[in-house]
Image 1: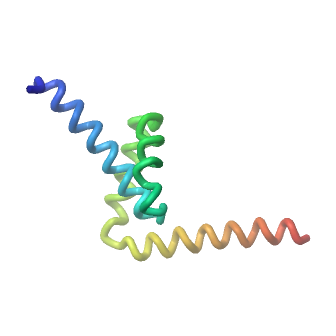
Image 2: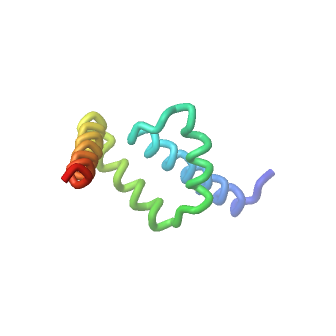
Length: 88
């Protein structure tokens, strides 16, 4: 049986895992890789960065299709600029 301090720590670690996992799903990480990628990130990410991710998810979770479109557009735009610089 966990003491209250242990329960709070367990809840914090679980929330950290779920937050990172949700972000990876939102940005389109392959489902087969989400668990391993989440594990890598959750052991190195700071509490401040995690809070920013939580705010980001909460802000955009009502309109995930727009967010996915925006992220794809941003990635495409960045790739286009990079390729243009390589060609010229």
